[in-house]
Length: 163
Picture 1 (tube, rainbow, N blue to C red):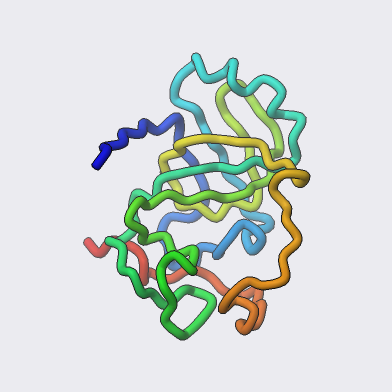
Picture 2: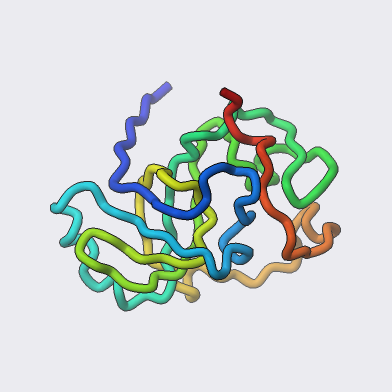
């Protein structure tokens, strides 16, 4: 099996200190702001023209997630589902992605809103959100079709490493 080594390109800073109480998904994190600071001045060149996008994808490492289990009860439901049919953070490769609002860029710091990541989360990559490519009309969303869409759902500690 191939070994993959990834190096963080930066870090997220948000008001979310622990999983419990953190909004589940950026669409429920409206009003929460944070920053993403790149850790190498050479990355500044890679930010050219990014300020023309309203939203960006931030790909990151769930550094505080528990070990993966193949059946989980996700935050939005009270029934078990296969891990790969959920967005639970405890995964075999704990990689997350969030589509956040890009407010401004100041040097190596990106100012963001709608952040749902924990403070100090390592960032692996940044990509622009382009609705033409990223927004597909769908007719089925699996088990989530049967779950009420509630705005009051927040994370708890069920997927966090226990220390």
